[in-house]
Image (cartoon, rainbow, N blue to C red; front, side, top):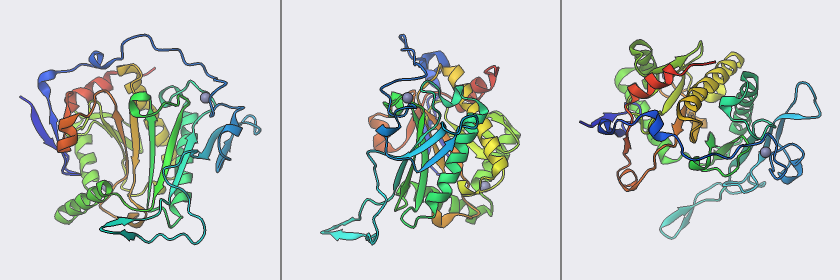
Length: 337
Ligand SMILES: [Zn+2]
Ligand SMILES: [Zn+2]
């Protein structure tokens, strides 16, 4: 019998379609995958092709050779939103019945490593740590700009997740408004706080650490769970164990812990499902909600194994064909070498 499950943090429902009983091998890609070399002369992100991207806004030099870079952040060549010029009007304008405003914001690309063939799962902890530190430093910098109300850091892995560029990279977008999807999450968290006097994410974390059946792994700073109402197979939430609403609060110890657990959870996914496509999204409070007691930042990992179709789009409710407890058990079982 399928069941409907509610995410208490957002009040969204998912259908867990247990009948179908999908196993990891049902999701593995078929066919031979082309081998990815560690350097591609045509890739705009590979070392030597720096002139093909806009000038960097942030560079982490290679520790062994300061002439080379370890992480490079550049403005997106085809930005969704652009940094406003002096005197730009942020005010919304009426356009007949409708509202419009200029597309100001920030859109940056984090070129994660020089090596073309790597992915977070196959990087070293040190490499992932530099990426996480870059995320934190750029977040703090972009959060200062008054045209950025919300900073979203995300990674699209593979064509199924919306990227055609193989070279390991993530993106950071600062938006001048807080979209309704985010506003709803904040409002639901606020409502839970009003009713219970506690942060819903802290409560989920305590509960899952005790229950353990949806726990994937944990370290000093973070715990990884398959959420009770997972929207897609093998969804994971990487939650900081101490309450913090903004990613900008991540300190240096936290950077190491997040890098370690991010790599570990993605490596588990990599082995279990043979390098699947996925998106991860760093969900942090908007600028004006930093420091709130009711919101809790986290990283949401969404493997792209199934497609959203008419029902999902029409209802806003996903059908998940893998029971989250089974997903967590499979992910826990992966042998870490
Ligand atoms: Zn490349
Ligand atoms: Zn919390």
